[in-house]
Image (tube, rainbow, N blue to C red):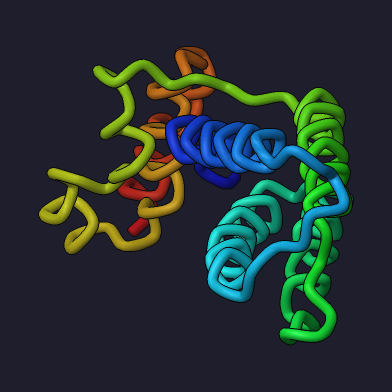
Length: 166
């Protein structure tokens, strides 16, 4: 299971919005970008593309790659036009929205998140004595974080069996 970094995605969305509004501020969609702006776009969309890849959003990643490709090929004689980039931004936003809807994301309350992120925390002594129980201890902690209490008890009982059959 991957960690969904909502704050990072939100921040990236805000960056895309500000970039799109910057492009809208050009009076003409046919206005050409400059190389400095293209390099900035490349860095921003590499980061956004990594986030899309992490969240398994392949169409969104492809949109990022398309923007990067367009900006990477830019030289003084062939700079992309503001309108071309703006339409790619719009497409990227649509793809991200559609692909995010295809997934289910769970929210672990901050009070429970340590059980999920560090499931073996404070279990070192037990694990040292009963290493076969490690998997069930880890799963029990994660189940507790996800409020799957019956599953948590199940894994604790399996861990107990592992300890008894040592």
